[in-house]
Amino acid sequence: MSENGTLRRGRPGYDRQGILDVAVAAFNQYGYDATSMGVLAERLGLSKSAIYHHFASKDEMLDHALDDALSGLERVVDETDAAGGRAADRLDRVLRGAVHVLVAQLPEVTLLLRVRGNTDVERRALERRRAFDKRVTALVEEAQHEGSLRTDIDARVVSRLAFGMINSIVEWYRPGGRENADRLADDVIAIALDGLRMPTSNRIEDFSV
Amino acid sequence: MSENGTLRRGRPGYDRQGILDVAVAAFNQYGYDATSMGVLAERLGLSKSAIYHHFASKDEMLDHALDDALSGLERVVDETDAAGGRAADRLDRVLRGAVHVLVAQLPEVTLLLRVRGNTDVERRALERRRAFDKRVTALVEEAQHEGSLRTDIDARVVSRLAFGMINSIVEWYRPGGRENADRLADDVIAIALDGLRMPTSNRIEDFSV
Image (cartoon, rainbow over all chains, first blue to last red; front, side):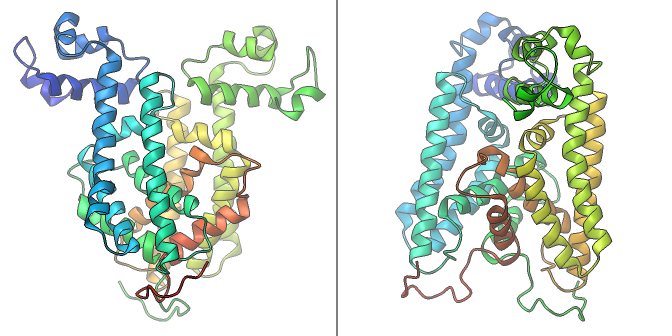
């Protein structure tokens, strides 16, 4: 069980955010549908009515968690737009920013990436995800037009593959591991923008490690 | 429904592969745990005992589907190893081959990527996935040592991010869409090996579309 569980427990323990954290962890572990209010109450050591004091429904918890993840991502694009500059540099900042949001809000982003549109809350979240994707695709197109990015790959495919790479981080990243967010963001940018190949790649002779 | 379905057997006609195709589609749609034999029987228009004639259990269906996906991926690395050549060229072939397996066996690979290790069958599949990942990581290391790939990114991170990009294709790829497997494989290789940036990327003047 979470460290929270051992610290807090009993009555006193959980504020609204604490309840949400435990709920999101359970949704990610068992699936949203499979996680009942009863299961959450047990995990929290609270009565169901104590949970209802903070959230009207499981759906409201989901809504909050997805909004946290989406707001984080949207803020990255908003701030980048506001700062201006070359499209390629803005794309760099958006990709880096997305890695940071993912690492900082790993459970919420994990939940977001598993949403399939089964409820109104999920459909609204997917709608916002699509709007975000469109803004990234528009940025890729702008960078292609300004001559900074190669134009032989469709901008939608570029943004899907770049975010496929970023989103896959939720599958293996664990906080406190050897890679921190800055390093991961550098790696993603290095691969996406400059590729893995050595600039002078046809030689086999030198062993540079 | 699959072309197989119309050709074969008993009721309307499912052979073993036809049953498996319908089962895998249901597992992907509803989740493996949530899909009962009863639901499958209803979808197929067969009795449960007609299904049991082909598969001893739901677990056996899962095992077969996961084996299809894993065998496809393992074959790509086996054949590449057998062909030999520079590590960078072998990595190119492995990444391309993986995209082709993913597109050719989209439902089975989708199922594989959702496996979380809840049963023995799932744990064995995860074990094979990890072995595959290790072979790819070893290939990345070899390409770094031979001087073909940049050495400033950890080989494990490289293989995770590259396969993150490839695996994300299951999220949006639909057969018959504008991108075929060859084109997709080209795009993945172009981004992973050479990156998105134009070689002479500091200019803004020319608009090449």
